[in-house]
Structure formats: structure tokens, C-alpha cells
Length: 166
Image (cartoon, rainbow, N blue to C red; front, side, top):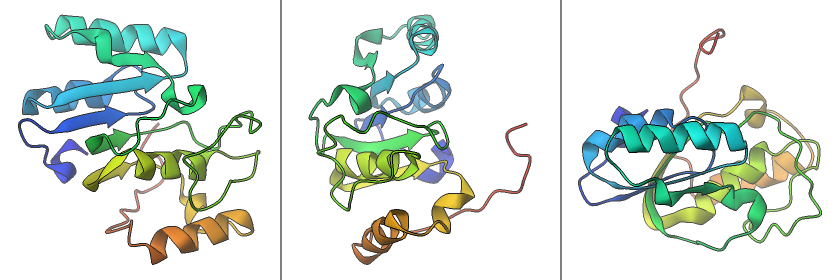
């Protein structure tokens, strides 16, 4: 995915669900300013260790901005992410980043997508791995999807074959 984005030296990078730092490890070679967040504390520790192994400060790897409600709007040139699919998040939390509508509490896929849009600079670019259901689900998600498309936030969809993540 890093090849799709083509990060340039000096750009800012963010992974809002950095897991154990796979995308961070991939994008490090492009000499970009790296930031990440992760909800899972154990994965957060692994990501920080990978930063240290690469002689980088892990100070920009933090607990999840997504669930903590931090306001870092439009700070990043690049976002790469593989957020957890169909995650249930307590939707009583403030979701100021959901500018196209609050998704159903049973599925956070569109919350993550809107969060990524919210965090990008105006000319920023993102590559996000999402489940194919995000393309077809009805109700609130249909309305959110329609608004995202209408506002030209999608330039390409790459459909991966089944079994890519086994």
C-alpha cells in the first residue's frame, strides 16, 4: 500500500489503527514524519518497539485518538490503515469527525473511514483496507457512502480477492 500512496520526504504520515506497526515499518524508508495510534495496548507496545528498532522515537505512537476524541483535524498528508473490520465501538462517545453522518453502533467501518477523511489535509491521500460490505450495506451506511462519493473523497477502489489475509 505504501507504493500506491508514494510518500515523499517531509510529508506527514498517520495510521489511526497502527496495530503492531506494519505500515509504519513500510513507510519509514520514505523519511516522512510518522504518527500512529492504536486501541489495543499490546499492539501499541509492539509498534513502539518497531520504532525503537528503526532508531526512531516512539513518542508519536499513542493510545487511540479515534476513541479518545482528540482533535487533530487536517494534520496529515498521508494515511495508511487497516482498521479492525466491523468493530463495535461505544457510540455514546463524541464523534465530531463523522461529518457525513453517525454510523450504526453495530459497525465502525464508516466511522474509521470518516475519521481518516477528517484527519487528512485538504490535498492529502489515504489508502485504507476495509471490508467489501462497506460498498453494499444499506440504511445509514448507504447515506454516508453517498455523501463521501458526492464530495469526491474516493479516487479508486481496489477489490482484493478472498483469502488475502489468511
